[in-house]
Image 1 (cartoon, rainbow, N blue to C red):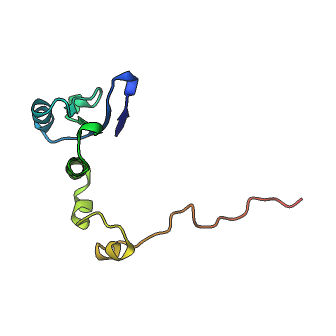
Image 2: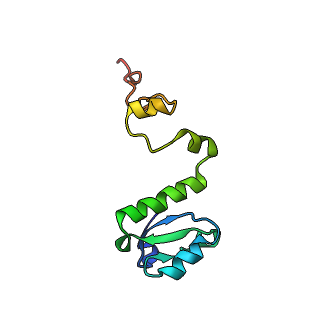
Image 3: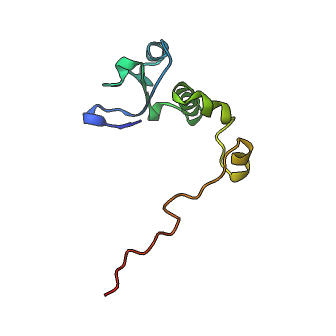
Amino acid sequence: MMSNNHHNDGHVAVVIPAGIGIQEALIKASPEKFYRPPYVGVRGWVGIELPCVSDGELALHLREAWRLIAPEKLQAEVVAFPADSEQLEKVGRKKKKPSYIVPSKSTKTKR
C-alpha cells in the first residue's frame, strides 16, 4: 500500500505487513525510516519512508511482506518472480493474453 502524505501526515511511504514483533523492532532501531501507520499499524503493519530507504533494502522488505501474505501454494510454485514466458513455463504456468486484448464482438447496430 502506498501512503502519499495521507491527511497531510508527512509520510511518503510504503505500508506493508510485518511479522510478529518486527514492527516494534524496526521502529525502535530506526524511527526516521519506519513508523506505525494509522488503521493498519495495530495489526502489525509498518510504514517505510521511501526517501530514507535504498532500493535493495525496500526490495528485501517487500519480499518478506509478500511471503507473509501469499498463499502457500503460490509460494511453492514461484521460485523467483518470473518475468518471461520461458520462466513461467518452468513453474507450471501458461502465459495468458490479458482479456482486454482479445477482440470482442462489435456493439454497433445496423440502421
